[in-house]
Each structure stands twice: as C-alpha cells, then as structure tokens.
Image (cartoon, rainbow, N blue to C red; front, side, top):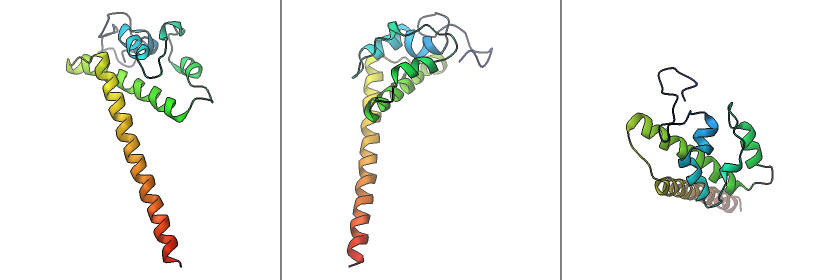
Length: 134
C-alpha cells in the first residue's frame, strides 16, 4: 500500500518488515500462517522474494490445471489477508489466523449457496418454459 502514497508507513502493520506485495500476501508471518493452515496448504516460504508484485508468484501457484474450487480458495484467501492487514492499519482491528479461515469459509459457502440458488432458478425456468411449449 505504501507504494501508492507517502502518507502510509512503509513498515508492515503486523511485523514491522518493509511492506511490498509479496511480503503482504505471502512472506509476512501472518500470511505464512494463513497459507500454511489453509484447506489446500501453501508453503509460502519457498516462493520467490520478489519486490515488484505478485504476478510471477501467482503464475507458479495458479496453473491452467488448477480447479475452480482451488482458484476460488486462493483468491478469497488473498482478499481476506488484504482485509486483515487493512483492518489493522486503518481501523486498529486485529484478525487471528483462525478468523481469516472462518471468514474465507463463510464467504465461499455463501457464494456457493447463491450460485446454487441461481442455477436452480434457471433450471426451473427452463423446465417451466419447456412445459409451456407443449
């Protein structure tokens, strides 16, 4: 975040190390603990220590063979790591690793329920339209 403005401290709000994208999402002790305990664990300590973004790292993690379920998990974890850091930095609200995992699970579960509801509604509409044509 501090790369975009000089009004934000360049030190990580959680550990004090210099914050960059790779540190924020993968190398901070908090992020490492989140990834290590994930449903599909990621040993983030083996990822490169890039300074200019997470793009190359994401290419290593998200291959063309990655399922939609895993992709959803990865992107949701990235979002909630980001949210946890910002909540601490701007709202003085701390998250635990467990809270991140519970939030990710709840978010994915609610998204899945909405998606299932939409698919069911579409299927019922298709069936109803088919019956009306007879």
